Length: 271
Image 1 (cartoon, one colour):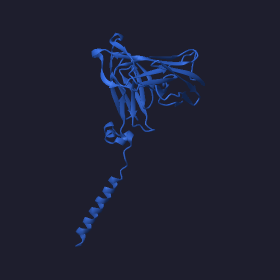
Image 2 (cartoon, one colour):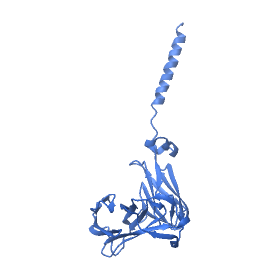
Image 3 (cartoon, helix red, strand yellow):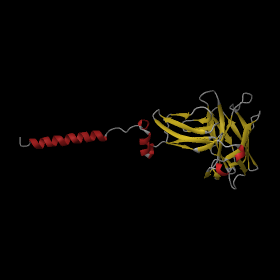
Image 4 (cartoon, helix red, strand yellow):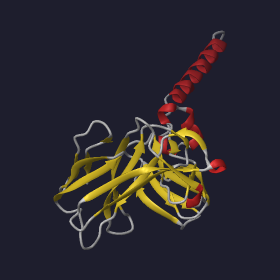
């Protein structure tokens, strides 16, 4: 009986040890069950929503991108207020939208039905008489980022280019003055003309690179998303760059051999 206190003390230590082991063996919480704040605490689990610009102008596309997604993550996009917008691209990690009216718009990305990321975009209204047309900066080049848009609302698929300058400009709300399209024979053409720079107090200080989104919508009389090779000509700073777009059942390839002036970020898109 003299040893009873020692036996009780040993049992208490064993109990604490077992309890401590159980706590250390708790499984990690899956990422899709964490709140956005807890995601931010660990850089390996961090989801981040970024926009090309938080302040933009009417009809100028804005690109929102989510970084940190895993292959199994799902994303649902929404925009408030609805209407008065054109969705140029919607995928798990990227959302390209242009606005028809000025105001504040909140764009949300709900990841795995739980974690919500959001960004507020301010759209200013500038009249065409508030711009001055200036040439591209010396040494500037164009990077073309191709993408494939597949509508979730209709049977519509088309190619879109996002063109971005490599040089920066003092007004980040300047526009790349450009035109693009395809003719009845599916000859694709793009013309980068100059820069539309807002005057005086309308200038939003930068510097920053500029971008423009160019969707090539299909027409009933000349659909191009069928197998074939289509000429592509891009004019920039007085030079015409020529290549082609090759469409097949499995992918879209861009035959583009230039390494300066106008370049492509990728030369192949999977369908």
